[in-house]
Image (cartoon, rainbow, N blue to C red; front, side, top):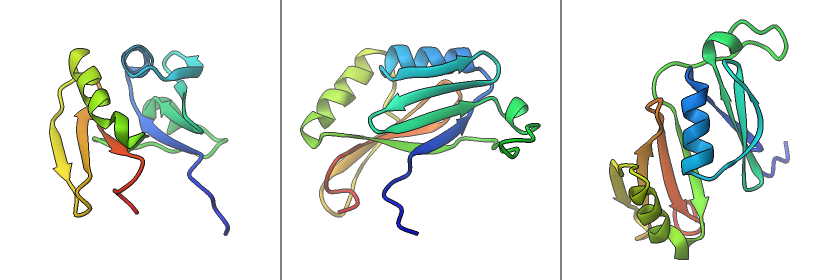
Length: 130
């Protein structure tokens, strides 16, 4: 395999309207497609964030059924020079930073939750995995 990146990733969220309000209105992601009680697809840079209602997606035939329960995790990459700006902007919107880690490289990342309890992270575009 000669994979270049992960094109899409998925979260499983029952209340897709709360997810839409959070990801579109608070985080500023563009909605690609929204079908209430079924799915919410969002653009984030060159990637796509898929949010599926697990009760709907686990009964599908095609694509194959898939679902998860409990908190899931993903990280959003931002320009390193904008890291603190993103932290301040989210805090101003009422989003609580639940943890901040300083990695071996000296770079930091911070964590927060979406309304479904998923753990989201903001990472700078250099230093974490370099």
